[in-house]
Image (cartoon, rainbow over all chains, first blue to last red; front, side):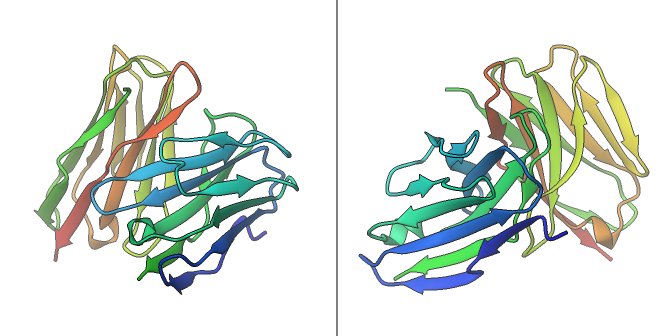
Length: 113
Length: 110
């Protein structure tokens, strides 16, 4: 049972380039989340989804877009990367409610030069 | 806006000493969760507290949820090098919104 899988694990982008981060979970969870983690700031919610075909903005959504076309996948897109988006990105999922424990992926370390 | 704060930000302890981190919310919470993140790793769920005044133990770890459901603490007795990492609390608001605290980074000196 793989749990939550994120690809890629590392990426270096130049300013203005675009990329998509993929999150896949095999636990049949309804809720999925994208966070970014910066030193001293904990985990900040970018976007989340409460089910297939639905997405919603979190605390820091600007510069990011998401899609949840299939229940098991949650994609995070950066259309025009900026140095301020250098961060570690984590995907997480929960079974059915925002009150349940979150299962995290291993993270994607992104550097934007 | 709603905030969850943690103190201290960093803690260095000698192996065998006790450690406590405190979590405080600006609003009443439905529940609180605690996560541990090892250096270079991802957050891993430790426990969830739901009831006012609840106390739960996991071996050397003791978790408390305040009577007003606005604060929580994690206490580790006799720290070991395996306890190294960052401990996050995450509070769920009445609107089912989960807010993570900034974390407390624990270093254990052998």
